[in-house]
Image (cartoon, rainbow, N blue to C red; front, top):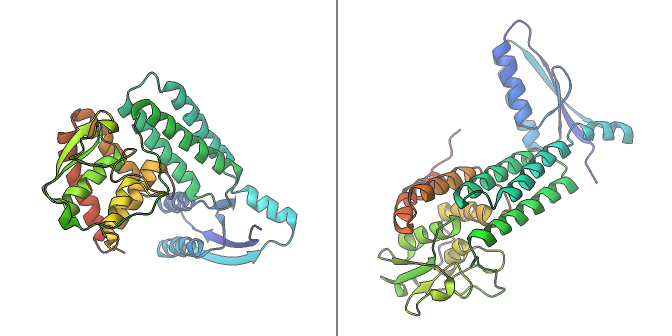
Amino acid sequence: MTSSKWLLLITNLPGGNQTLRMRIWRALKAAGAGSLRDGVYLLPKSNAATRVFSEQSRELEAGAGSAHVVTFTSDSPDQQAALLALFDRTGDYQEVLDHLSYLRLELLKIDEVEARRRLAALRRDLSAVAAVDFFGGEARSQVEAALTDLATALDAQYSLDEPHSAPRKISRFDPKDYRALTWATREHLWIDRVCSAWLIRRCIDPKAKFLWLKRGKDCPKTAVGFDFDGADFSHVGHRVTFEVLLHSFGLERDAGLRALAALVHFLDVGGVPIPEAAGLAAVVSGARALHPDDTPLLRAVSPVIDSLYAAFLAPKEG
């Protein structure tokens, strides 16, 4: 059942401080607040909503304005329905869905880099809508399913050997047994493969050599395969290859690697949105355009992943 508890922000900013007025309005809009009338804003009651309204109240008071935050409960089904209507994101979801449909029609006309760039942008757009969709519903599920279908279609067109998830237990291995080996994966690296290669060389086998395969079944028996069906390390259950490597070699205690794993998971199979996802997808897309060969591609992207890893480990400001 949808909660009937709400927070109301009543603002007053006398004078002509249009800069502050616009900044407050943009911040509240970005937070998903509904507007009952000029200067009166609404959010479903939550700790996050309390923080948003408190921050904007302080901004107003610092600018010689005033603000009051009021908690209330809607007193009738009609009033509740009217308030919920302020947070109906159906139109926003429809816009994303329309762009997804158009991109599907365009798949045969554009190259892979452009297709993945546009898919990443639509994933970002969907995440932005979902972030302020406080009540969910059929529209959100429909667009999420359409995005997953499009990602599958894109992989089917450009990555014929995209791995399927296997329902098996993840075994533990000692990195000391995986030293100076040849590791093999499918060519034309994308997020899971390039990040997995980075993880292998940084945390498992510093002297690793890589072999880029046209097809997974071309993997030599002397190489350690990853991210294709039948590989030594690939998708297991809900985990993508990066996550499987993390758990296989006992690296999941590292907070920075766990954050990277969440990022790779989102970009590879969807799920919980990660703020840095669009940036990494754009970097890898650009690197693929600049470096058709996978060895220089890995060399170019690795410093970016290093920086993300360091950022995830750094103390949060504020």
